[in-house]
Image 1 (cartoon, one colour):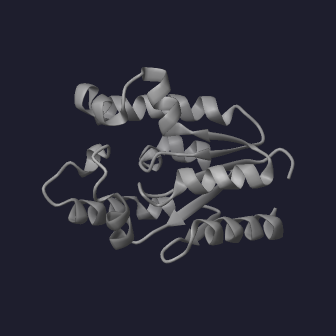
Image 2 (image 1 turned 180 degrees about the horizontal axis):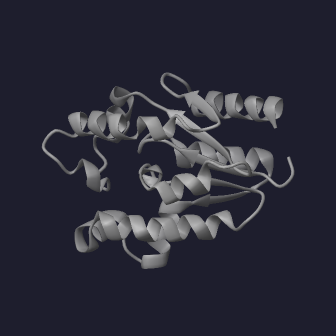
Length: 172
């Protein structure tokens, strides 16, 4: 694969970072994780950033990081789950030169994967399971704009990675 820009989207807990990293290794491409870049840039956790500065400021900084990452060639990028909320970000990742991969995961699976994770600021609510369903419903139309959709429920990390690799080889 030459000159590939592969961008992973999906809900928190869908496996974007893990799968994107494995795929990058398999394809011998650079790997970037927006959340990791963010925490390194600001030297603060995303959860703390949310508390201190709010979601709107976070989304602005997230867009700046996305723009910086997309300048590169030959990479796999794991985006934060809400990156698709801003039209500007959608315009950046849903275009001809980028292969977007949506890791589709149902709300029950997401809840089971992240129910004990206190670093998820959007889930610091009374009923996180219901909040996951609400967030998923709000974002699904945007996630569905991806060029490749992979259902992740009841699959291993390796099965998901191989399925993506196979689709990439067939299509690109």
